[in-house]
Image 1 (cartoon, one colour):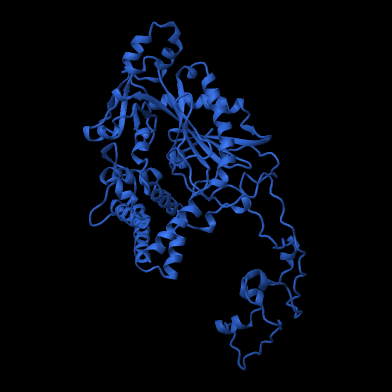
Image 2 (cartoon, one colour; image 1 turned 60 degrees about the vertical axis):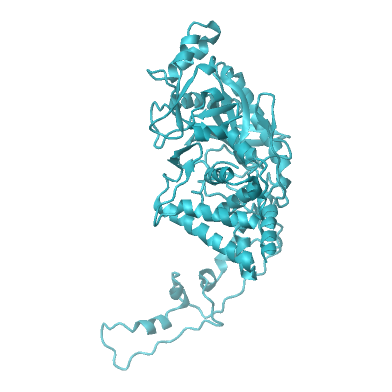
Length: 545
């Protein structure tokens, strides 16, 4: 039976996780948007002197994206003149973060005419100690991004089709939401690019970074946001990608866990948490471990994930791989942890039973672990189901009726007639309320009591039995109840489902991606086949631009 369980997991990986049928058109559209925005950043008077290539990051860059190619992360590398003179030190208040001292950089370029504009910028975005300030840097970039979108008319034309654009500042990212036929988002994440010589890591972590030429300091806001924040999150994306590369079923297991997370709507289980769990295991296990059956790996990793989420008898932890002093789950509440823990343990139990004896019921439960009809795109409308709040910042879409607010309306089911508005008004009260109508509604005469008592109230049961049907259903009774039987609605004519603007019919996703190629600027450009996720930003704190 174990072989059957393995087959079910492999089938789920091919059916519900991969998205090759959507890849080409989405990446073509994304490439056009990326190039348009990046070229504007590069052309900016001061920012253009700092921009130094880009890297496709997140789930796409790691080849870990699942379900739909609807989220892209683009890391925009920034380097200052005399960049190697930046002094990076660990932030003692925030494990995993660094402080960037720009003193030597500013002292060197202070009298350089060709770096005058950069020096003037630095004077505005450092504190009195000449430490770079996350909030001042982000505010400056936010202004530039707003100008870029305004210059583009908050829209982009690709292949003759216009897509409205919406900009939000979400965490460290400058996010553009694309509307219209293609619904996806792109996180433009600024990152100060630093060399291996400037790395701030403990000896144990430094050995896993060895061989990586650079790392990044990300201007990620604190929670809650702080003015004059000097703390930047250290990011070792390139080293992480190398640690996860070439380990057989490791990435298949990550993808399945992420798909399971999406289906069960456990948004608090962020993609980077899952990735961190596997980074730790990748350094503990031999390469041969990842050649084991996918069933064995999934059961092992579900068990380890449950251990990190446990609340009692001892609270589990998920240490940040690059600085174990930081517990990634510290920001979660006990109810949030308990909710995810129960879900993980239930799935682990199901998989263990299926591995021993895959009955029909267990097979259906395994299927439901990765498949949810509600999460499938409706009739070619490539917008995935999301727990994020709906976006209301986009301009009016071309070819879209007013008042839709950008909300996708699923097509009616094929061969299903569209009811006419007036038909519902003519339905008898029973049909509207859902109460099964009697064959004939007859007025019932109420016999008076032999000796009525003045002011007495009839028993409740008797009163209910003698009420007209409208009163039982809660509808307002008419002045007079006629005994005329309800006529059935005329059979509606078969209606043809209306054509949805800006939508195409697409086949279910299938297939895997490949590692991205590197562009001329040292970044990566997704080309089919393309790597496949996105860290799940907390949009509750996003600011609409």
